[in-house]
Amino acid sequence: MEQNAKGAGFLKVTGILMIIGGIIGIIVSIIAFIGVAALEAMASDEVNFGIYYVACIMALVGSALQLVAGIIGVINAKKPEKAMTCIVWGAIVAVLSVLSNVIFMLSGAQFNATSLLVGLVVPVLFIVGGVKNRQG
Image 1: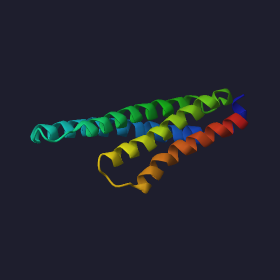
Image 2: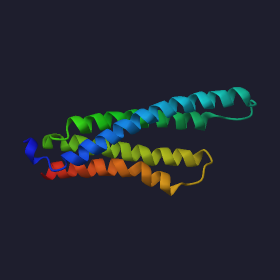
Image 3: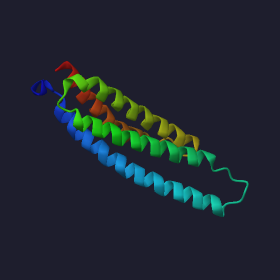
Image 4: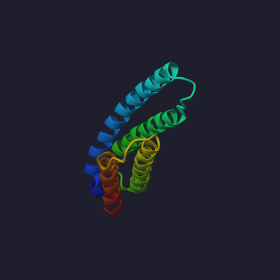
């Protein structure tokens, strides 16, 4: 069945990119937590840092799920019977990318279309690979 996996290349390459992005995201999220905690320690009691912690948690969870999705994609790249699993994981990562941008805006930042598009490119290509495998 492995020769029928038409989206294997998409899944493998985007899976590797998602693994790299997930690892970097986890590291950055941990640094962000430390930064928010340091800012909170220096700030007056009047400032609420709750939304920043929520954003850090979302980033950490999203990065961990991106890492898992990437691993699943690489492992299952040549298995058409696992295409739907890859599609679902790609959709989860894409939805979390959108949610993290929404939370970022709720924290007071301006909407950044570039960030949203960049965050969706790899998960969408990952989904395309899954769809191609499913059809193959």
